[in-house]
Structures are given as structure tokens and as C-alpha cells.
Image (cartoon, rainbow, N blue to C red; front, side, top):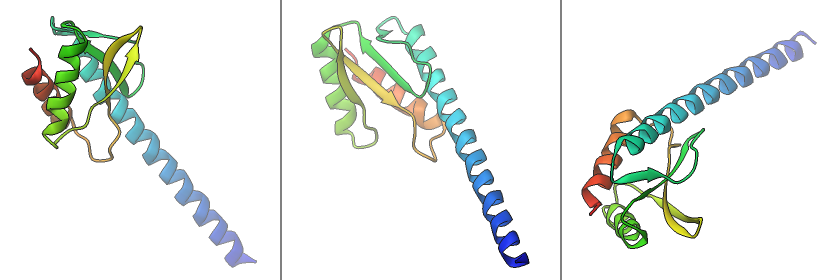
Length: 120
């Protein structure tokens, strides 16, 4: 009976630790996405397309759909980053999601630089 009790307690401790680490990682991803959001807001050539309360940032270049499609193709063709897209209010919108386990600020900054370089 004691072995069952210890095994159960060990499992609960492991699950609590994993939950703690997952929450910490999620907070880090949200913070990185918020940094990206701030860069978009400060850039005169870009605009937020929707609120970004979590780790997904929807944004677009002010130059229109063709400019945004070109940015998407250029950034994704590099093979270093992968942006997704959607249509919001009938306009082509770029999406950046921060969620890979080992993502750091330098990675998010690198994708922002690649986006800016690809922008007309």
C-alpha cells in the first residue's frame, strides 16, 4: 500500500511540475509575441489587423494585398521562418505565431528584420 501511495504522490508532483513549466513557457511565448506586436505598432509601414492578446499577431503592410503576399512569399522562401496568412475584413493579413519551445527574442527579432527587408 505504501508503494502505491508513493507512486501516486510522485505522479502528482511530476504532473504539477510539467504544468508549471508549460505555463511558464506559454507566458514566455506571449511576452515574445507582445514584443513583436509593439514593433509592428511602431513601424509606419505596418499595422495591426486585430488585437493580439496572446501569442498570435495578425498584421499587414499598409501597401495592400500584393505587398503582403510578396512579404509572405519572400519570408517563407528563405526557409528560416514560416508566416501564415488569412483574410480579415477582406484584406490579406500576415500572421506570426510564437510557440516553438526554444524560441528566444533573437529569433522573433530576426523574423521581424526579414519581414522589414521583404517589405516594399
